[in-house]
Length: 337
Image (tube, rainbow, N blue to C red; front, side, top):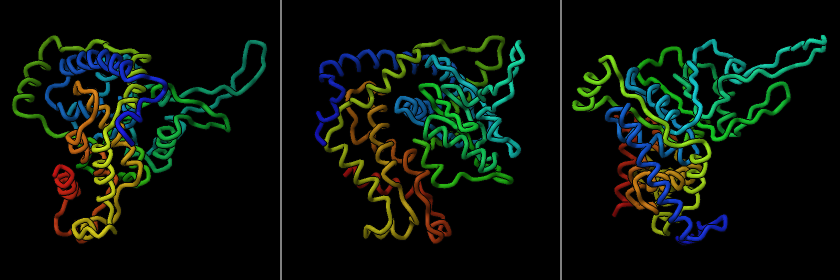
């Protein structure tokens, strides 16, 4: 695939540049507004917004109190889309998130079934501690994530556009949880690890969030504009060099290709969906960073969040203390050479 083969939908290179310039200006405002409320965590914010611009879902993994909920609320405001939050618990049922049909009676006494939509019918959904819900409830959410519609009582109900799920997991307390199966983890475009804030960022948090007035974010985009940027991302050109780097990275992460390090450390590797995710995210990151085409550096930066939840270490590797991030870092070094 050459660098000009992505100029689809009848858009000329000049038109793409014109639209990209406008998008760059809008995304710069998005960064500024989010930065008014979320202090530090630049990488987390970038990766989350990149996933949304790519049209995907994000799994946020981090300890409590690291502003994951605040991030979702802020993004909903800044991007101009509706948002809601569901706290996942073991007794949560699929109908609690999808909605259900009730028997409704009008003034004339006529009865008919009426669908009452659940909280999932929003544009930006925070699924808080998704691994605390039963597999049945997880599956109901993940079906909507993949197919962008749900079926209740035999009737199809489409999700709003755009539709993004930002799910959270607490890595500390695993008792009583239901870990997401590999096939369901693959539905997430990225797994973003949320670290503790830096010293400077935490000092700013203490000073700016404990007074009478807190900073609030303002809306920058609207639904139509966001969808337009998402479509623009898919038309951005990608050079053969970057395409080959993505292909080499994803394929090298699978055991059975004669690589001793991967064969010994990895029990199963990423499928083709990982490459698709990398292509989209590399384009979106370039646009978010003010560039009109992705580079090898974008691939290297996105390797961990795109691949880590799509790989599993062998028992031997885990016993030796190897981390999946270490394996990915080794593979990234090769594509940089």
